[in-house]
Length: 324
Length: 269
Image (cartoon, rainbow over all chains, first blue to last red; front, side):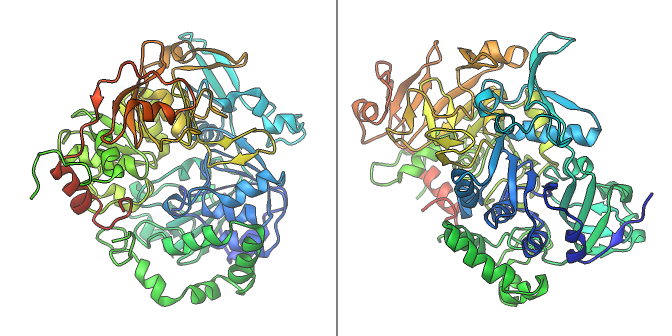
């Protein structure tokens, strides 16, 4: 088994090639590998193909910055802090990004089938919806299902009778992204991964992917993380690179470490409703700092301290969240 | 002081009535799938009043949490405080597909008379969409596979349509692909058919579905007439079965909403 390499975020991200297929850890605005997103934009990645169980601030930013060509998923937005993924909407409406829609379960099962090493997964989910309308098979319509790209299945889905009980189901093709970039709380120095709180779809995303970059709040000794193996999610042989980068999910949240930075997300949402706004935001927050540490200095100690989680609860008790 | 009397008009906000009307759809011991926002308020009102044994599942992976601070989304760490398990999508959507979810609360941008809901795009859809929305999320899976679903929506003429621009979430009459022929949901879901949209609750009324799967007005909220509601609907709404006025929230429910459930004012004004 190849040894896991501990690298910088710059080195890890430099392994990703233009046109590669990517997926991520987390859920909407939680535990997203934001530091890696900033670095991908800095390195000028192009034509990326995102396949994710759901989108969020990370993918809306990457799309807005012009790094993405295809987005296959089911949802994008910033939850309470921005109802839609405004950058994806704009890019799609301008014909600059292609969307392929699946439902939450369907896209999850694409990843789960990939993780299990099987070609497809049957499900009842989302039968009778326009996600199955052949008119909206966008990759097919663009001629991208001709088999020339092994990462794009020849069909969006197939409706077929199960051979055992005679019910009709949707068969959803497996997905094996070139890369999963996951942000987690803890990783051992040899690559054992521990995720705390809700697991979202991290296990499927990591196991389905050909190459995995783990960006962690903390790297600990293998001896320490192996004292309680039942708390761990992924073994080292399924990991390629580890990067230690505290606060690396900011402005998204991370269970037990910090709260979502809601004010930051609201500001991102409202100031990036136009391409000019997005470009200015990227100039300030991505190109305007030399690396993630400088970004954190710009965010500021006080702000980070306010969102820091209380260890007894897993979230911050100091952050002002509502209107009262 | 808090009591069980119904509040009078002017003493509650439309959003209070929405949350409370939704809460009344929960039976004790129901397994409930709820999303971010109003659905969270509704399940918590139900658990604190008539349905203390209802179990709440959030789609990011928390089961039966007892949050002491209102989660701002389903992925929030607050969801798993005192939860029985913190798992992931695979587990909770597996439970949904397995048929254990009794009731789900959902939202949408558009709804049609069969309860088909759109959260994907407005206007013409295609490789270059006219107006892209947020996408399906779990809406379609949950509406397809829970025993009952309840939609909480804003009442507007352009949102209550004869036919939604994109069927994100399956109602009672849906297309059977690949042909696209519109048939009853039962025919499409066959062995996994277990129900569908039970009610749509808006700021003007509560709608239900008849034997043919068509929407009708069940109750109107205080301050509106059935005709007002019909006016705010693009299709010819059936108002012949109206059973009366929607019950207002009680003083106790209002107090729970503002003082216990959402004291920070995250979703409530």
